[in-house]
Image (cartoon, rainbow, N blue to C red):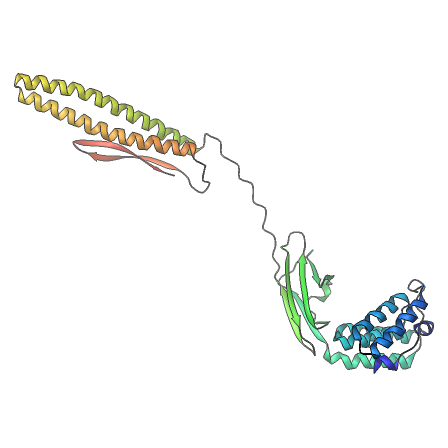
Length: 313
């Protein structure tokens, strides 16, 4: 078992594989204690806790031996990509310190694990300069797009953001033991901002037609009222002609009165409709997608013809 093959105090390993001065840790005693606890927990089958101890020991005082044991611990957790990378780093540290046997051991473990690595390929549907892509919260280098990168089995969340692009996110599950998955990010640009619509002034076509219809309706009702007034004279003429026994004059008066009544009635109705339509156009909220129109058409009337106002709004 790898955990037992390379158990050693991290202090001794650090001496055997020294790091640069900038990377040197300052707490080797804590690192040694944490390493020993990790070994004990791993031997007891408490793998998750052991991994935490080895990781903390690495932070306190990095060494190839601790890293090798951390890699084996992660392999037991099923984190194959993480473990493979740690084996390779441990081998590199050992070679730098001329620890050839230990380097060969770490390399052998990495090689044995490599066929089991699961990989995830991230692609873009189109070129997207300035688009930021995150995998599990970590930035994805643009050079990695289209490349099958080793990842730990499990669910992975892909997110994008960037000025001028729509935000996007998705989750994909990668299975263990050499699974291969691909995900293509749909690159979509934000729509260009639409110019703000401004309200038309009160003198717009809608208002003009509204005033025309209202005024025309009022005029039509005025004419209708005048015709009804003139009809009174026709009634008087009928009475006089009837009293004198003048049938021709009596019939003519009746015809005049009926014509004025018919025209006046139609004019009154059209005037009311036209005035109502005009007031609607002037007072109702404006609908931007509708252009109001109006027209006047001749209509047949009893004994003659008249004009009708036709409005669409």
